[in-house]
Image 1 (cartoon, rainbow, N blue to C red):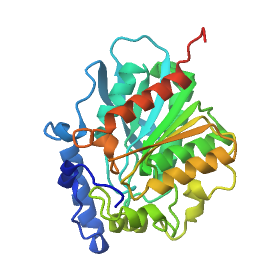
Image 2: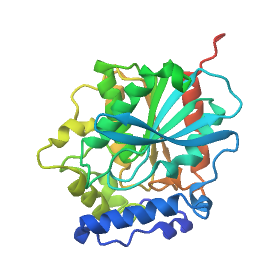
Image 3: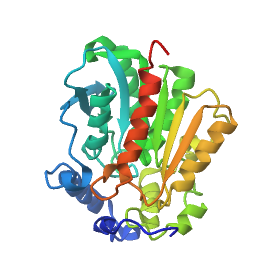
Length: 320
């Protein structure tokens, strides 16, 4: 590994035998993880929500199912407000919107904006592309019904971490052609290659002993979420031929993350194709660090950078 991870991240060390995990074991593990992420004691790791934001659990009706959403609203701001659509990480097999309350509530209160975190469907029950469809359908639903939600449809951004970053990037690529218009995207240590070259990057070997993401978990996530009938290139943003005409992009990466090169290379490709993209790699930061601010100090400056970026593109100074 290129550096030493913060000592406290050892609390998150993954000891699961992912090569042998069954569907039933995965579901039970996910349920336990989601309950733990929503507990009060977990806030010591995941961070306390911003007290200037209100968090509401709700749901919307999409074709064939009802989708849970976690909505973060500023307590002292009048609408309509920008929309930030947020996607958690978890390799498409785990994770919950609640794990991002620290970041999402802060952005809601300080941007200010309405931040909607999507509890998209997960594998093995709902393999890809179901999570991506949930993301796009939610984006269309919210922008089509903007007055009800208090949303300004002319100020919309997508944001995601890890697998959620992949969803956000794919939504931007689809919205480029089909709408609705997006004005920014924030990709936090995203996965951008879900093909069989997923782990064929230098950062994978350099950070293989990262305590927060094992290579065996990455491979298991792909195996459990990707059906044999789906061409992985169609859901891997890094494999797309054309990355032009996308919204201004901020890519956050972690120096000690196996997925670091996924983000670095995607930012390079965006710039090469003419998209306004900037990237920042945080030292002494591990995968998931924006979801574990209680363990990784780099989460705070990264959050400030995200806030500044989104403010600049969603709430620009009219006198500037």
